[in-house]
Image (tube, rainbow, N blue to C red; front, side, top):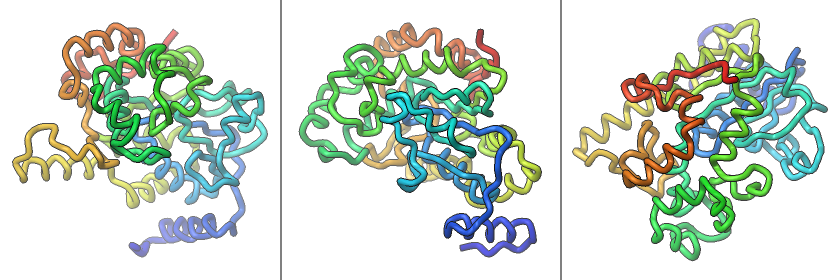
Length: 317
C-alpha cells in the first residue's frame, strides 16, 4: 500500500479506513447521485471509482457490488418499492433502468458503450467467462458457444433473448423487467438521456482517455474539493495506462490483432471489437436494429470512426 505523503491525501486515506470500518460521519448530499450503465461497459471499473469517491468523501454508497446491507433489492424495486427515494447517497452502477421518484431531482450519470461491442462481449461472458450454476463452456453454455457468436448477438437483441438460460453477465436474471439489450438502450433514451439533470458519458472515453472521463464524472457529485478527489482516485486507478500497456504487450509478443484469452474477465477493452468478431451481414442487421441508438449516442458519427470516442449529444428529444 502506497503511503500518502501530503495532508489532503492523508486525510482521505484516514476517512477511507474509517468508512470501511464503519467509523465515520456520513455526508448528506443535497441531491442523490445515480449512475446507470449496461452490462459489459466497464461496470466493475465504475464500481471501483464510485467506491473510492464515496469512501474518501464519506458518502453513503449503495451498489449491487456492495455488502448485503448496502445492496439494491432489485426484485423489491421492480415490484413497487422505491428503495432509492428513501435514502441519501450514491447509487450504482445500475446496469439497467430502475424506476424511482428521485430521478427527476437526482444528479444522474449514464455511462454507455457501443451496443455492438456490448453484445460481442456478452457472448464471451455467457459462454466462457462469467461464473454461474453451469460451469463455463459446459452444458447449455457450450451449446451456445457452438451455435456461434452471430446467432447469440442477434438473439440477445430481439425476442429470442428469453430462450437463454441463466444470467452469466447478460442481465438475463431480470429479463422480464428490463427486456433484451435493444430494449434497455431504448428505455434509457426514453427515460434518462437528454434530461437536464443527466450527464452522458462513454465507455470508449473511459478506456482511451480516463483522466478526461474522470473529470466529467466527478462534476456530478458537486464536491467542494473535486480536484483533490480526482487526484485520490487517479492514484488508485489508471484505466488508460492499463489499456496502453496491454496494447504494447500485444505488439511485443507479435500476437495477431485481436488475439486474446476468451476465458479472461479482462478480455479486450478497445472499441470496435465487434468488427473482428461478427460477420458483415450480422453487423448490418445490428446497425439496422440499433440505428436510433447509434445515432443518438454518436456511434454512427465520423468522429467515432476516426477517434473511437463518440461525439455525445447531451440533449436527445
